[in-house]
Image (cartoon, rainbow, N blue to C red; front, side, top):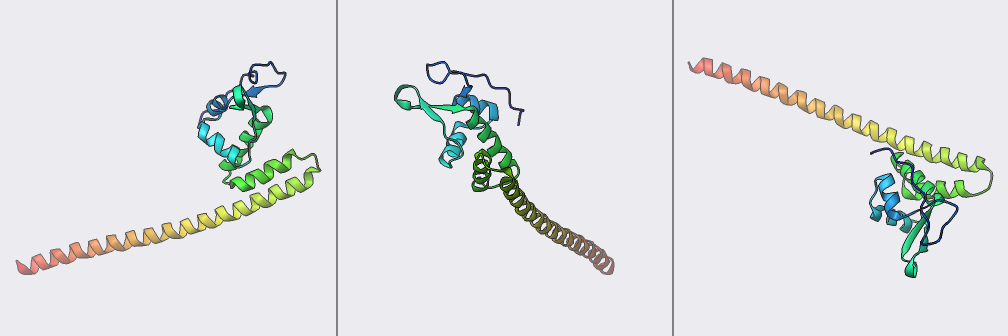
Length: 156
């Protein structure tokens, strides 16, 4: 995935604003996502763009939305579920003490690490089993080839 480019601020709708806003297409390009994926994150409650344009049909994303999208993608790379990501992102937006937030983050990461370690152990066991089957198949082929040569020698 290419490194995200620095977005250019665009005015929301037709009025000039002092803070950066983004369209769904701009975020889509910057983060190499489909617009459908961004709308899905909206449906999950991870993003909440304002509405602009005629009839409020145009999504207007703020720097906050962009940050939440970036954190969402980071969480996905870590293998967290969208529910876990939402919980953590929502916690970081609260003005409360960060100790409970960091404690919960450590809990989530620890649970996720344990799950990955278990998956790695399961994969290692499967790999060991595949190797054992390969050795057995090679042994049987070698025994069959040796037996076939002995039978041909007796017949001759």
